[in-house]
Image (cartoon, rainbow, N blue to C red; front, side):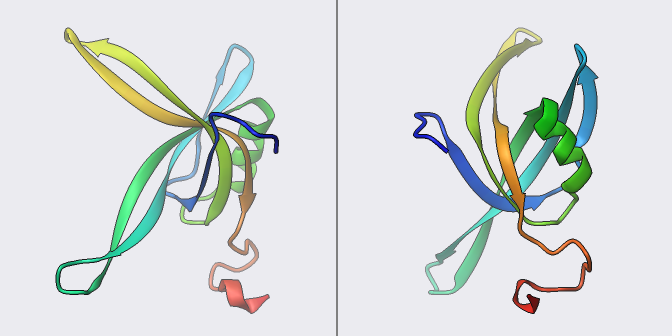
Length: 119
């Protein structure tokens, strides 16, 4: 991976299997992943805060996503941020997504009950 000015790396779990479409002869995969951040509240208790990120992939990476990415299976991904604007009922809205360039499966795929320490 070279140095990029617009580069995002995330580790998270997809909320669903990728939605696959073909647009202009190219495959498109769309899904979202949840990432977790931990912080202490005012009572010094550890709290988990989840954030959802919209992911898109095109072409060969979309084909790989369709084949390997499954709901709940942890992945690491690299991509770039993209913010789009659209207008609905006269109101301008913004939508941020990550265009995925590559990904790596982190969870085991052979047995859903395995943990990362079972290697």
